[in-house]
Length: 283
Image (cartoon, rainbow, N blue to C red):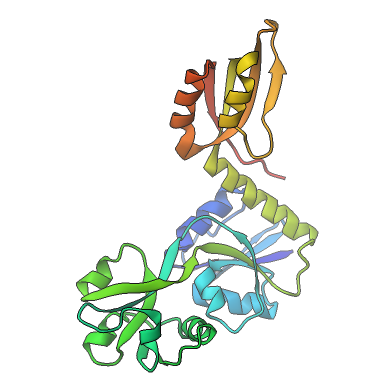
């Protein structure tokens, strides 16, 4: 039975639950339920703190888990990132007061940096040969500069509103671009049959969310131009029609580009364009 850890709270929790539900797995029915055994799919779901998931997976107590890349890299663990999941995107950056002389990475040398992700920050600074005093805080790191605890902070940034309200500005390159990822225990082979099935089902949902199926007819003389607009994941399906001057094309198109693609298909002479939502297949 595959043991899977999912976030019990936080910004990654609901998207993770939704992903598993769409993949056909049974979720908990009570908010305080910590473990769900899904006998039909031969898995156990463990609802754990997001910050702890990488630790459990790295030690092999859990086979796979869903957590943030930033949380994975901030732990002393051997858990392996196995699959990006396309949600929970965030950027990890340095920020300093508007009137501070700290404007580039080199200026961090010798300063006090407050962060909830001290290992991640320390590793980054070491990689760039910068020495600084890393001060660990569990939250609300924006207040540390105003209260004199630190000269600057390193934190997750979404809109930047919280930083601006605290009188801080981002500087330098991002420390890390993070998102939700599926991680695997080093004790579990990447070719494990149950893991392969689980990943295929998740990938099926991610593909169905990202793409739609587009069917259209196009003159044979315009096939090359049309296929250039709808290359699909690998290659589109092209079928001859009774009228030998025309053929039918079926391909996948990214959802966010579908309207633009349809307009261009009409421009090259396509007709009878049909767009169909995808559904993830379950193994």
